[in-house]
Length: 291
Picture 1 (cartoon, rainbow, N blue to C red):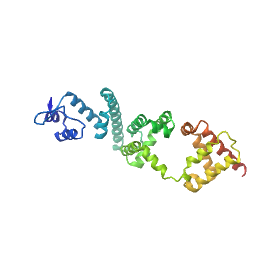
Picture 2: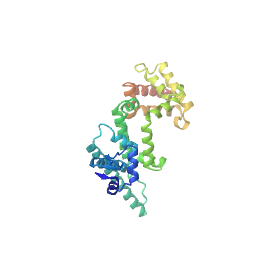
Picture 3: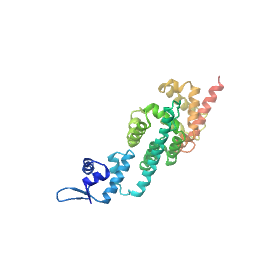
């Protein structure tokens, strides 16, 4: 057994910090003496070591407490994951140092590949594991979400560049994305509830897709296409919509995209995207032929 003073001397953590950990239930002493002094055994010190590893990785104390209290928490598995994350952090730091060395020498370097998104990608993986129902609800399937993560990995440099431009740093971007993931359902529900029913674009495309199997050249289908175009011209920015031809081409390209097509079809039925593309392509071709 070690006293709180001995633990503080061994670890470099202040006595007040150890007392605070006790107060919030993060690290309780193994025993209390008759005089009320805290004593810590080897198990408590191993738990403290875990806490320090998680802190080094940027976890908040309440998050660490929640992780350690999970009934399926495995110390060895946690060590392996922490090692993996620390290696990623070290590699990222080394790349940043190399970039700074080049900039210090006066080199003009506009590369963003040194700013990796490991923390954000790990947060997405955790979201997939812990919020499976939300993933399936909004992405259609776990496989679709894996495709989303892979697209970020494939285009990591451009995503990092945009993140720095918009948030100032990868850290601030990651923090914002983690917050959004933690409150994902609440944010989505709130945003959707603020959109008037008649302005919900997805509902209009779903209505069109519900006619799948019908002749896209029919007046009913073409009137639905006109309705979507009319809505877009009245509610979306003009620079985004452009003229009818540009908007049709944009919709055809969007619903032909393999990733977006897979999400839409998983949620609303195989062939839904192709049907929307076919309907808009007929509208576009007919408009062109009339010129």
